[in-house]
Amino acid sequence: MERLQKGRIKRQAKMFKKIPKASYLKAKGDGQSIIVGFTGRVARIARVHQYGLKDRAEADAPEVRYKLRQVLGLTKADINF
Image (cartoon, rainbow, N blue to C red; front, side, top):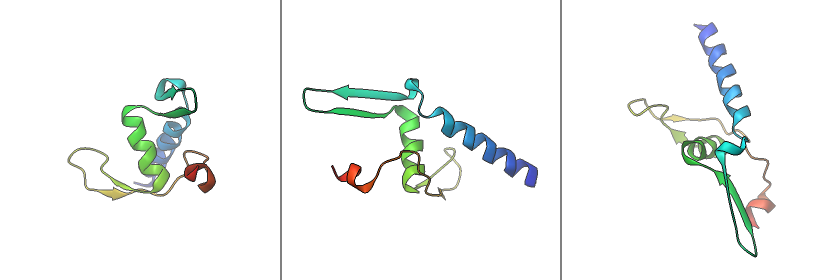
């Protein structure tokens, strides 16, 4: 059983390495600002892990509170800007 859990951790670490790829990012801009964010399902996954929220792994799975993980390197000053 422990072996399965170790594999899961490796898969999750692998997933988070792929998140910064350009194919998962979207960018919008105007004359005053630029906004960069994640697209689709990746946006939800990143938000849940960034803030340590509750989510379901699958539709019928039980709700789980995920650990807070710093996916994005933002400070409080960056967020409140």
